[in-house]
Amino acid sequence: MTRRISIFLIVMLLSVCLTGCWDREYLKDLHLAYTAGYDLSDEGILQETVELIIPPENEQLNTKNEVHTSVGITARSASDNLRTKVRGNIRFNKYGFLLIGKSLAQKGISPIMDVNFRDPSNPTSNVRLLIADGKASDLFEPKMVGELKLGEFINDKIKSLEQMSVFFPAETMDTVFRAMMDPGQDFAVPYLAKEGDNIVTKGIALFHNDQYTGSLDVEKGLMLVLLKGKKGTNARITKRVDTETGQKDRGTITINVGRKRIKRKYNVKVNDQGEVEVDLKLNLQAVVEEYTGGRKLDEPEIKKINQDLSEMLTKDAETVLHEIQKANSDVLGVGRKLIAYHNKEWKTMNWSEDYRKVRFRPQVEVNIVDTGILQ
Image (tube, rainbow, N blue to C red; front, side):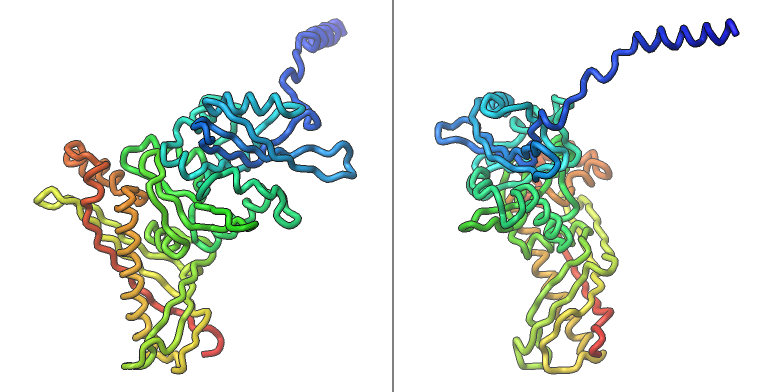
């Protein structure tokens, strides 16, 4: 009995010493920042635009969103100035987006992202980085797209484009930061623009180190995703094909190479002259989703179309590789392969200059494996 009383007294004493939840914050006292954007202001300083999600006063009401803008000489000072304009504290949503205007991205994004990696309260693992053609602040107007808030609309749009393999896999602030710190790897992120009242997809924004250096349109973005050996749930390609000898542009065909496995061979080597050569071969298994040619898709016809598509997609791959070299963006990680397997040669290179001299030899092979239920 005495022992039980002693244990009870010890438990009570320890309970008194507990501090409780000293760091909790009530949702009603917070404004969640779902989407943030940065631009260079007309005065040449940093401008921050934020979409804030305002919690309802009671459970029967819906959340509201507000758009606020502030300026500062750094990202932290701009955020502090923004906090003086709103009621309640601001917390950035871990599933949000960071939009950066093109002119600011050309100067480099490291200074903007620096504060996010120094402050553990700022999420990075699921925050998506996007580039805006023009000013990021333009995309915040109007703050509603139909019945969706801005952040909700962008979230749905990005997910849809990832499923279509326009860009894939998803790049977050974490993955972008790791690429910026890696001398043998660059990165690419979604590229959006404002056209009238619509937010449209321009394609993919290419980076070298932390600077925006160029872009690819939607069609070329899909090819880049395939060259990386990645895909979403769908990857549709539409081409005009000569379905009968001597008759050009007789029909069009739409194939989907996202439903089947992609076979990829990626070999980086240094020849005796010290030149970097890259052999990149893709084997794409295609499903026919649309075909407007007049001839039946029998075995001889399929063989001919396979050959035509293989030649066309190989040329497309050459164009994409030329453009990423022009942008000096090593998104395929050629430098990473050199560091791992040709380190002696790598140490003698100036990769910012030598990457443009890399000799790419792409080869795309298309094999139609399914023509649909009509044939």
